[in-house]
Length: 158
Image 1 (cartoon, helix red, strand yellow):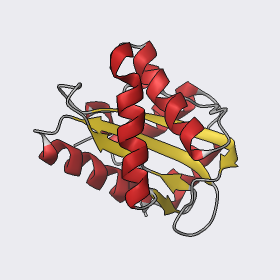
Image 2: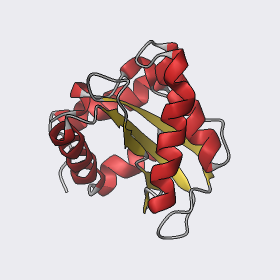
Image 3: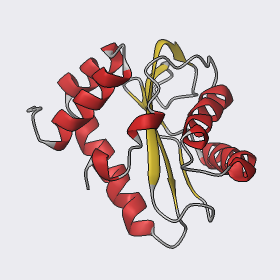
Image 4: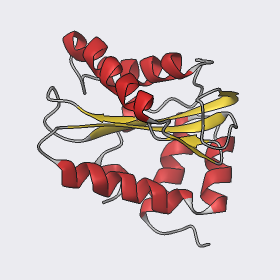
């Protein structure tokens, strides 16, 4: 699975404004709502589902990255977004550091394979220091799109 299979490029946020966990999640879900990837009526229940997932353990996986995610019956296919914060967000990360790069995923409950493949792809790409560093430095939506495309085309080597 590649980023292009699930990241909604119109919902990429290169200048995340939020300064806390809930704000970051709300801002990213709102970006997906604004491009009709989720319905307005489902906004609160999706945010609540992601926050409930965070209660099980932070999806701030370290190295300045978080992957908030949930399964939700309102979507019929996996959708996701990417956000970059220049100032960092306290996300209760496993390493105690602020988060600068976010990958948000929402998938249908009956498609767990897609959800797992997307998480695996994100995890694999994030092991590459160059990819992580460039993402954290991205200043525009175009920068982020280019990096995701390069990652999809295996242009980053460890």
